[in-house]
Length: 610
Image 1 (cartoon, rainbow, N blue to C red):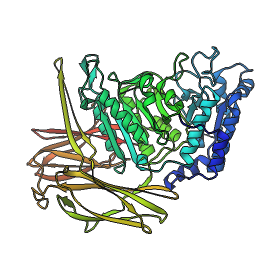
Image 2: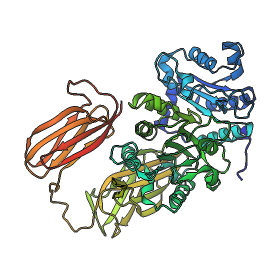
Image 3: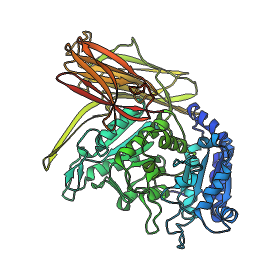
Image 4: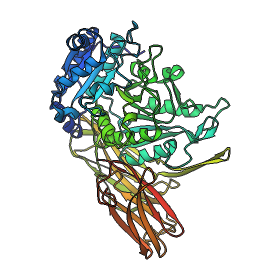
């Protein structure tokens, strides 16, 4: 059992703690300082609420006002315990709409839909089907201020959550786990049939996992537990997949994201994780993940009869999570994935804090706001959960465009500061191309996806000044291809940092890379992806032919025709500026571009984020 430290004791430890805030996060801290922040707590939690507010002031100079829930009832509803009173109070509190996005609300306590039943779970009232309704401050249907909740039922749970948050900020465990993410994807089986039969289906969980992995920074090490890769036992479960989920979480992953079916107790019909029987197997107190689930009811914290999976993760003493973003009710697969594509862009690529990242995704991703409001933050909306800051300053001596089997190469890394002491360098083989198909009851499921290449060279390097270097031989029989990478994780007194080089081509030497050849079939890609507001679509075709390049929305409607002409065989590119045929800007969201000839069609997905 983990040793419990009192909250006051933790505040003393803060004085000698290690700060892990980097310059990317600092800009968001500075914006938060200009916002308004409030913690609403019942009387019995006010001491802890004030200690957390003091911590944020001392650590970040972010002022958080602490208010007794009963005082709000007394002021706004004549003492009646009315959730509308809290919204009315917040409308008056947040009187400057220009800083709403940089502000926050933290509800400190659990709450259920049976508020009048005496229970430890009834500490802070709930409203409607989402905490977002507390922060709908104007006349539209959108939430206006980031909001989160600590679903604590007693002082012990509350202090555990707060202690972990303070430790996470001031004295993090610096290691590779902070640059790793786990994506778990449900398989294609449902109720004896197949689902997700089209690549664009919101129920094609493997395709959605692939889409997410392609969206994130190439510096982040992404592990995947893909349900289709595991054998089903006679009970319809996939215990080896569950084993791999638990192993990855215990080893440490900054973020653990699930895509698929689920409920309050279990992820997937195949039991990828069952809280009631497997929670005790988590032993990751030094590597607490952010847990997110593009699923249904995993975060249904409002039941009086049971604690949902997200609640149990937060209050489990021997491990669990630092925060959870999960839905209370049944949610839509397609809308879920659009929401999380934008959310992880904000977290991993832009280093925003949880509340701002989620609210921005709800408002600006183009997904259904009715669906998005099902998702609550069980945790502090002001918490940063981001990978280390990064750059691309890894150089291969001589800058070869292609690495061949048995090549002896040297690499050099130039760091931005001199206060790093240790480097863990890894060279990865190329990503794997995978294809899966299954036929059941006359229906066929097919999906293409990739897997992250494995490290073929690893070394711990002592850093001299502001650089490091090493040499190694490219191992024979590793995966070849054009998507290999190198990543260095470095740490020191002030925190950690990541450097990476991607993409790198690895060849077995059996074909000459110096002779540019047109691909044997139609090829297309776009960059950047995601983009705002323009992206370049590059394509090639090996024969003279008539070419049409069109952009479609996710309803299958043509948005714009970019190319319609006869072309010679060759390499081409064109730019889409995010407008329709009338040159009007289109909304954020997922779009498709389709490249067509007389004999072949290629369709690819792209994400416009504004």
